[in-house]
Image 1 (cartoon, one colour):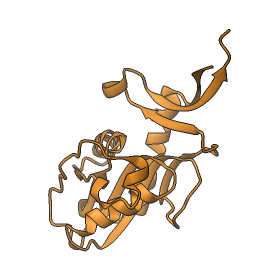
Image 2 (image 1 turned 135 degrees about the vertical axis):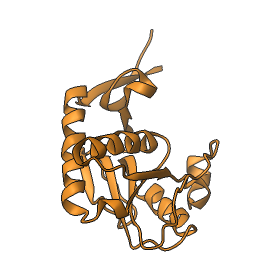
Image 3 (image 1 turned 30 degrees about the horizontal axis):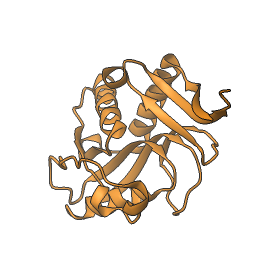
Length: 186
């Protein structure tokens, strides 16, 4: 018995670009003072998505929104289940007191990464407000955490995974659903 992966396109490259454009418009509408906004990416694709959104916000408004990153690995309550990886240093470019923070991640699943990222963020201070942007909400929440900005909701089973792919990292662009298939090789 060998296992193969079935890959389904959720968002094509063109659809991904349209979704990013829509999310950018929603940020501009919802955040009153963009000069008080700090975009904070969660590794790994959240950091790259932060870069994309920062460029898009600059193209639309002419304002350079500050950006940074935070790695919530040491703040997770489920490290024994998810394991650890090489930790990325936090990059918080400004005191976060009285700032509006937009945490950015590629996919929200149980909500545990987001909770850990909020805990990590509060070790830097107390922001005015924390919001969450995700490209995909795949359901299965274990904590009462919901995104303020969501690219697409995709109901999944627990054996499936969703991945955001970006050209500068993956040499392809889009959002993909992957599921394991069992195949008998005789």
